[in-house]
Image 1 (spheres, helix red, strand yellow):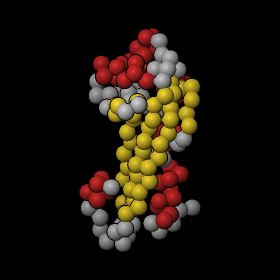
Image 2: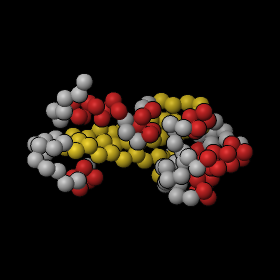
Image 3: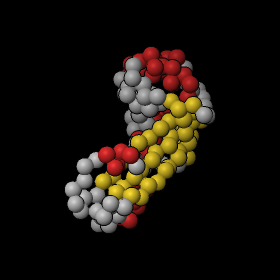
Length: 140
């Protein structure tokens, strides 16, 4: 909600904001700001389930806020050092929470997902569409 409220909004405009957090148990995983952090993150989630929690907020033309939280459970296969090295070398997961981008090479390493695939990418489309419709945005 804070992100949506921080956006300057002209009269009649609708704002959509969101953010995604990756959690392993009670631990919130940071973005992989460098390769060392990325290796650590991939090692932590290797062979384990983690949660991707996406929060959305839409502020409608009248200034009313609506929000949703979407939780997706993701499990990677047990990763070998070679798989971690190859993925890190691809550069794909840098800057991403949890150290991976599900929409790319990492998808081949995931053995289980329950929830919103697009939510893991950062914007759960089903829920975003529902919020935008509720805010009065005509969608086809």
